[in-house]
Length: 248
Image (cartoon, rainbow, N blue to C red; front, side, top):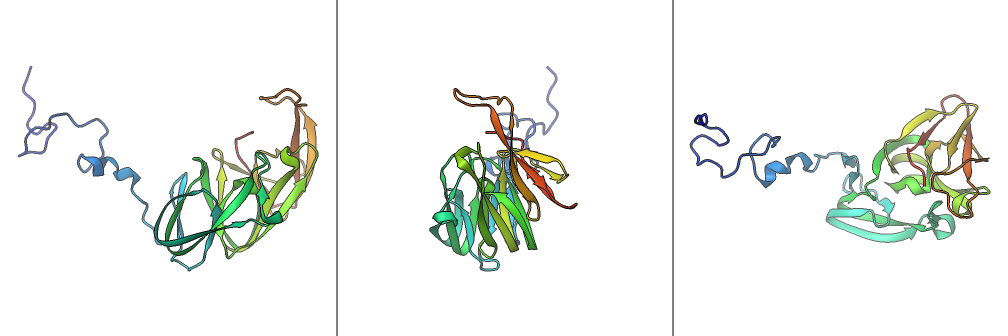
């Protein structure tokens, strides 16, 4: 076999590496640090910073405002952070529309950073500047305590758990919305219907009406009528809904 060209697979002046560097190795050398370089913490300077599609960091030291986050969503924190627990409003709790489980919020205060995630869902920070938005309670991950919020209950025959709980936010601050997959934002038309499990959020000025139509579900179970609960949205031009590619 012909001799290897000098310096192949090694730094000139050093002994040859015992194994060839794997293809696609990050630039800047080998080793643990180089291998993990692509996943380093994103430089911050803002209150909310997305680390990747499924992990977000909030810096409590910026603005000094507490954050309310879904209980169990904290994956890591740095600094002096205190956690306490509180219900989200409706009878001291928000009941998940699909699972029937209570939604408990934790209050994060102090000087430090908190990293939040939830079951590898996609996270989307939405900054409000005096405007308002409605979000399905199931899709709320965290929000600034400075925001005013009101828990609303949409009742309708056939809704899992008997009601759909939503939270209307208003004021100045950020909400982090979680979705299963990449969402899509659509304008509200005179005939806009969405599956109640797929709806993530909508403009606060939209009118919501519960509507039922019969169809076969993919995962029908014994006793299931196949009836799907849809929400109809009405509103003036400029109103929107956000849906996710997901169905319970």
